[in-house]
Amino acid sequence: MQMKKPSAPSPDELLFRVGLRRTPVRVGVLSILAGAERPMDVPSIVGKLGDQTEAVTVYRTLNTFTRKKLIHRVRGDERSWRYALGEPQDKKAHRHPHFVCDECGKVDCLSDAVIPANIVRSLGVAPSYLVSYPEVVLHGLCPKCR
Image (cartoon, rainbow, N blue to C red):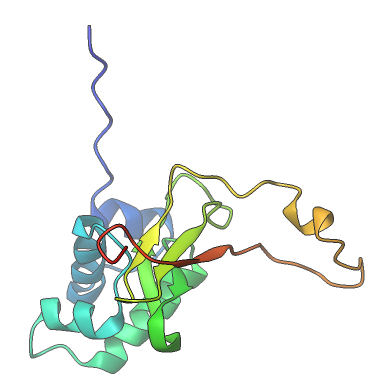
């Protein structure tokens, strides 16, 4: 007997969980990120939302979602942020590394890999630093560019 995988929460449910009001832009951004195969940059998100959506509203929405840990972000090519849906049941920061292709700029979440919990201590970071979370970004060539 095969176990049925639980369905992902709807954008409305995600917004409710973190105490945010439902707006068309918020629902649209969450829907787009939920359907994305990899982290997306702001121009790509704005392009999918339509001409009537202002980029500044999308930036504000993404910053709010990042602060509420609904999504996470990673630096892609040319130092631009890329955004991906987070794990809504995990109130901590995401714990997986990312891969950036140096040839095509594609950014992938390496969701099957886990950043070790003791990575900060193993790096010998002085106790005077307060580390919020570690972020691991691997660079190289993706399978397509290799």
